[in-house]
Length: 370
Ligand SMILES: Cc1cc2nc3c(=O)[nH]c(=O)nc-3n(C[C@H](O)[C@H](O)[C@H](O)COP(=O)(O)OP(=O)(O)OC[C@H]3O[C@@H](n4cnc5c(N)ncnc54)[C@H](O)[C@@H]3O)c2cc1C
Image (cartoon, rainbow, N blue to C red; front, top):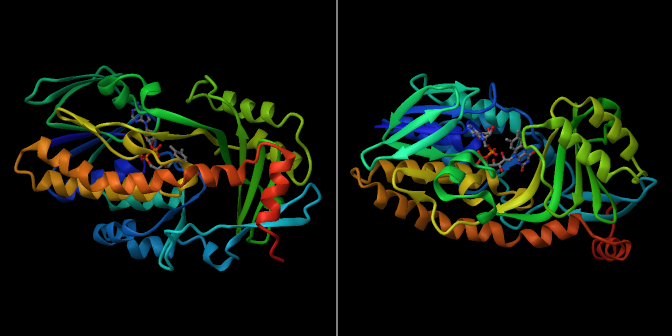
């Protein structure tokens, strides 16, 4: 069976590996000119570690651990002078001692490296239109190419184009949780001794996390939905400059300077995706496109990997009955997605108190650890 996957990130790469290992002829189309290797470290946890073991990459992932396990299990909250005024527990309830934190670029490279040579990657292209004839899906690409596939997997993220084409407008499914977050790598001068720090003013928080040689920074800001071009990095940089125009204190000025130069800046809305169904005919959605739990859940990557594995297993055992495969995929994944999505508002509110009073109340609830 020939399968087209849209998106070469966590969900798309994991699906390519899992489906091709079970005999599918896979093509992956990615809109960007190459793999998108930026982003902060992310966790591979729980059942996703078993999936990694089945994919033969668990030991490689472990060898690329960020070393964050050695740091204290708290994010220190600091005031404008860098004094510790609180400490948020970093661990999530689902964590186990085996969980791995890994730089997103390493995870992307390792997943990509696990995909066999028989998978075809097409970069700088995207599905423009698709028609499900019942027998197959006829696909027209923006490059002008055309293809015919027996199955299309939309693994193209929270702003999924596949979802838009098959299920309708993004507003129906994506729920903006009121916060934007931007992530970037920072220069060595902003080293924070391998620890993680958070500095908040009303509605805005910056985060610095140290990993030996590397430091990662994050800017968050409360805002209703903003209309901007998801592909225009300069416009996204400006959103942070605007949100932080009157914010100073602690290392904010240095972080804003670093943002001007940053080559790996990534910004998005903190969103969840909620859908009544994840497939229609021969098109199925996977990962954030179908069930984004949001940045604050820490579960987007594990769910994408587990979903890829479940989908591939059900596809391989459905004897050509795709409706059955998709029904089983949803049945297996929905409880996991529900668990991941439900704890998010609390995590979001801890990081982004809207007023000085709320900041003070949070800091009192989570006193400093020195
Ligand atoms: C560059 C980047 C950086 C990220 N950094 C972080 C981070 O620091 N922390 C965090 O928690 N999460 C981050 N995420 C999100 C995280 O990867 C996902 O939440 C999670 O891993 C689920 O992955 P996914 O593959 O479903 O979606 P995503 O990782 O969002 O991947 C979607 C992929 O589809 C591609 N795509 C989009 N539109 C099209 C199209 N029309 N045609 C073809 N391809 C398309 C995108 O370029 C991307 O490669 C980041 C995502 C990206 C793309």
